[in-house]
Length: 270
Ligand SMILES: C[S@@+](CC[C@H](N)C(=O)[O-])C[C@H]1O[C@@H](n2cnc3c(N)ncnc32)[C@H](O)[C@@H]1O
Image (cartoon, rainbow, N blue to C red; front, side, top):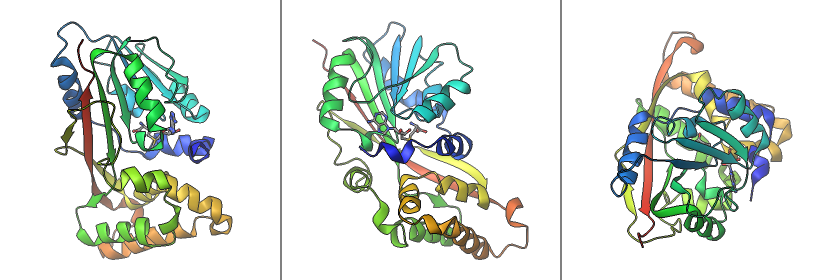
C-alpha cells in the first residue's frame, strides 16, 4: 500500500482546508439504499479511509454511531481535533482489519479511498462486519470540470499529460481511471449511480492548493524535491491567463464540478 502518500501532517492540514465537501444529498442517496431493507433505526456505520473526517460527518445525522478509520495518524489526529459531533469517533486502523465485531455494521462506506485497499482482504472484512442486509457504498471522482472548457483542458493536461504523468500509482490506474468499473466488489447486484457531483466555487490559488493534495502530486514532489512548488505555480499561471480576467488572481472565483461515481451493494439477507 502507498500509505506514505498520506502520512505527512501538512498533507492532513491541506486536506482539511481545501478538499471539497461531500453533500447531504450524497449521504441521503446512500442512506436511502441502506433503508430499503432496514426499517429499524440505523445503528452503526464505518467510514473507511476517512481522511480528515469530511466524509464521516455526512453520515452523523443518519446513524446512532459513526466510526471513521484511516491508516494515516496525521489524518486521524486532524479528524479528531476538528470533530464536533458526539456520535462520530475516529481511530487509526487499516481497511483490511476493521476494528468492529462481526455482523455489527449497517453501512461500510469508502469515499475516494477504496482504490488504495487490498481489495481481497477488504471485501472479506466487509462481509465479516456487515449485518445481513447491510450495505457497502464506495465512491470516487476523477475528472473535474470547470465552467470554462479551456480551464478543464489545462487541469487535465496538468494531471494526466504533464510531468506528473508517471506519478499515478498503479492502483489509481487500475481502479480509478476506470471509474471503479474494475474494482472487485464482495456481492452481486451492484448499483452504479452517476447522477451526482461535488460542486464548489474556488479562487484559482485555492484550486491549486486542492491539486497539491492529490497523491500523484505528492509522488511527483517525492521524486523531484528540487521542484519546490514550481509546477503548481505554472498551473496557477496557465489557469489565470486562460481566464483573461483583469481581477487579481486571488479574487477571481472559478466554478468546479467533480462528477461522482457511486457503487452500492447489499450483503444478502439469510
Ligand atoms: C483521498 S483520501 C479520502 C478521504 C475522505 N474519505 C474524503 O473523501 O475526503 C484517501 C484516504 O485513504 C486512506 N487510506 C489509504 N489506504 C488505506 C488503508 N489500507 N486503510 C485505511 N485507510 C487507507 C489514506 O490515508 C487517505 O486518508
